[in-house]
Image (cartoon, rainbow, N blue to C red; front, side):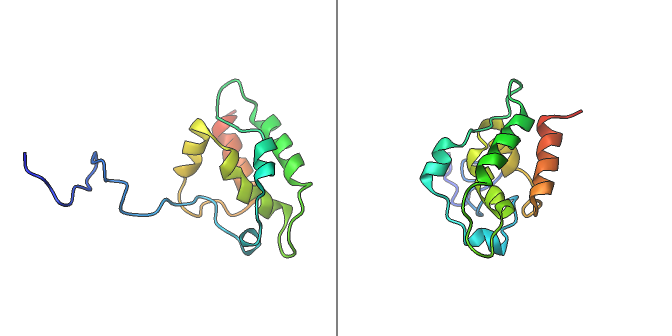
Length: 122
């Protein structure tokens, strides 16, 4: 079997190496100044996208906790939510977020709408 120097095609173990991962949530100037403390991440509930989970209850608890966190001048609680949400989406929910187009989420309202469309379809 011949060794191939550049094996980056589909199905290759190296197909993912060519570019950095994209981020569906567009970074706002306010998000850049926010530092997330490890203690905050330790107490936030995770959302996995399982059928037994209630996305409305998750978002309500998530927002309630994020809204009491101090944010630097020039930032908002919406900036804080958008910065933290990728860290609490796990499993299928985390994969879903990672596969959204780069920069497709610019506001909390946009995130909330597509999140609920995906995990609580009517």
